Length: 239
Image (cartoon, rainbow, N blue to C red; front, side, top):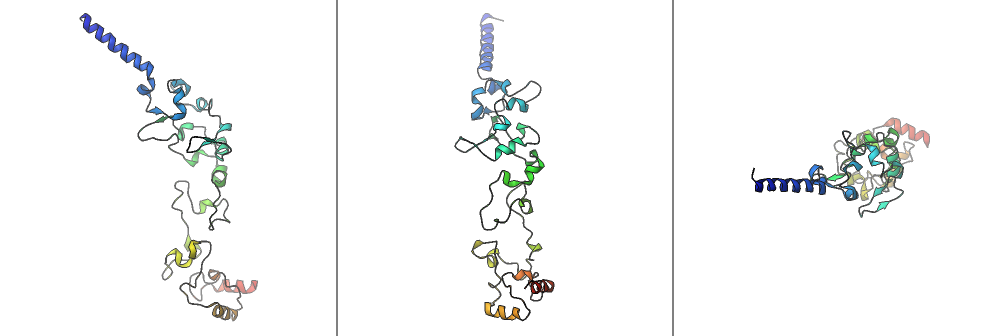
């Protein structure tokens, strides 16, 4: 090997070795560190434990579960978040299940995934511990019965068994707004299709001893005139 070749080889090794120490993250990491971890981007062992990956105890040196908070879109920490209680009750303290400290072309956020199975059963059953209570007219009486319509796999679209209360079969397979006017799904009306005046309704139902006319489905559960006679008797007994 000539002297010139030897110098070139040594110079190349020096450059490679120097760059390894100068930008070790770029050589071994899957991507750049998240903004919150850039200060320790060169200190791999701050998060990683040789042969053991990234154990939770390395994370909790900085991110203690009893001080867990959430970060708003502007990057500021929001104290008093309901997520504080959620992190305290994580069934398995596996931070990597939801979080990552490196960003790639595919992973663009520090929390790329979340699975409710990480939470304790009690926390999963009480959605309002983490989620704000709905304020729309449809949900004022609902507390923690979210699972009746929603799932933790996908919050939308919600499922609702309308057939259990009233079958949407012909001729009642109509658009929602036909019965639920003004986009208020907590109330309904039948007079949009059935041309009844209040006076006529009151007169015909008075003959049956029925005076409560605010809930047609109470007696007409199948949408027919004579459906649900047992409910009529129940209504008559109450009045």
